[in-house]
Image (cartoon, rainbow, N blue to C red):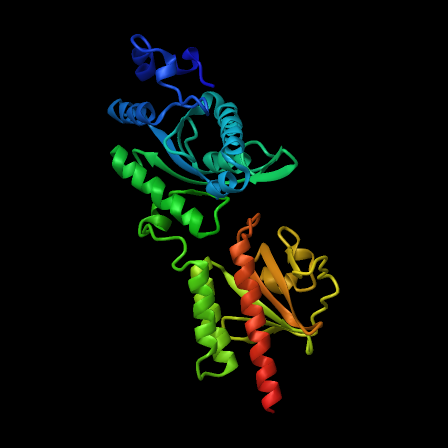
Length: 351
């Protein structure tokens, strides 16, 4: 929890604390600055024309933690997260809580891209702040977050403009799969628009997959259309297939063969769902060199089984590493794979 001496080094809080107790300024759960005073602090920095970087932070899928494990568990994580954030930022800046699982923090003295990139990179490694396990009541809860960052006055001149820049980069990070940070760079992000992360919900996606496969097109065209639709909704970089009979690896963009004679012995499955996340181990696979050409770092694989026979494999791929694959994504992967298998069997029986 922030104390008076930590806040008083800033002129805004020094003046504020002359007439207010610190309890009125601090969020009681996280120990961070509360929303009202954090926003006023940022506006004061702008008024004083002090250069700084501002970041907006969302904890990933935090509602699910509250729903699955209870609000007391969620509060415990928020309290510890607040301490971690205070300790990590240290003398470099100040953090506040602006919503339930939303935070805003200011960083000073990191004047170039390399320094701020390293600052954020280290937040996500060695369980300093993110990618951290909380072991509570026999549960292993893995906490990640997404950050969008922009700079005053380089990227914006007012608080509202700066917040918008951070918001755009935050949503860019969410659209890339969350669990990452995006630093606003004008040349790259000037045309960013804030969009919904998922266009369709799970039932709608499954319905549309079924609708595409009920159409009159060839199986190849159905797979191409479905792959394009699923990639757009889940923000995937690639979808791949392995034909178990011919041992060929296909790219869903054109359904062309990108590797022949695939050795799938290094793809091992230990449960009935036949799913494994090869996060961080993609390059170790026989197909690793082929996927490296697409810069794929995270992979979720589903083995397509029909009547105890393996017909092939379907894979969702992302360029970004350390992706936290969700149950909805697994459900879509399985449904897509089963639908392909059933349609192939129908065609085979016709012949």
